[in-house]
Length: 330
Image 1 (cartoon, rainbow, N blue to C red):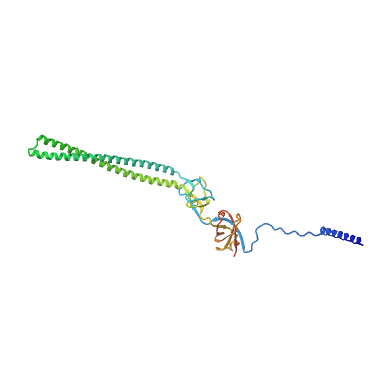
Image 2 (cartoon, rainbow, N blue to C red; image 1 turned 90 degrees about the vertical axis):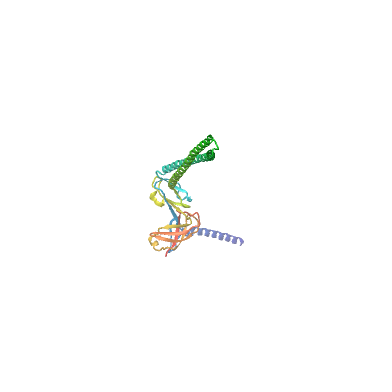
């Protein structure tokens, strides 16, 4: 009896295994899950995402101050620059030669001043000597005059010999003649000093005029270098080396002065453009940066162009980068 039950158990187990195999073989496969195609997320009907280039809101234009051709560009777009930095050199015929001529004229004028001042110094030294000789001659004349007057009085009273009187007379005449010569010499040296002083004044006036010319020539020469008036980022440059710089006016260079006040220029289709208005909120996304969106708003609408402004606190966001702007339509 026990053997019979064992045999039945084995048969039951084999039947179960065979049923499972048949079930797996003939089971219908489950349907595959649908694969989601890659692409932008579907937005609600009242929202739209537009793309545009980031640009600065505040830009300073810089142009050449002199007529001429562009000799060299010294900075490239995207480069940080500082106030006073030379951006380009403009070649202008005659500026260099004019500056050299003015510098040479200044040198000649300075030499004339030096000679005139040396002449004044020499004339004053000569005048000092002549004045000293004239003073000595005057003193000698006064002594001779006093001696002559005394001998004249004595001679009139018969108290001195004629020879003594005549000697005193001769010495007085000689001293008076010498003083006259020395006095004329001192006056002449004084006149030469005044003439030399006038020459110094004239030479200094010429030197001042030539220095003014040199300063003007130097200023014109330096104006041939285009300098940056502000600190900022160079976002635009026009012209070519060898071509005129004047045709671009004040837009030879464009410098962004505030790298945190930015905007995006958009060109929406007419149906979308009709549903936009200034002041609408916007969300600015920069695909190159894995960062959260930045709040902004529609600044203005010019024709078919929509400007969205926003303030960035990320130094990595630079003009020229692409941005996606999400807008909620009216």
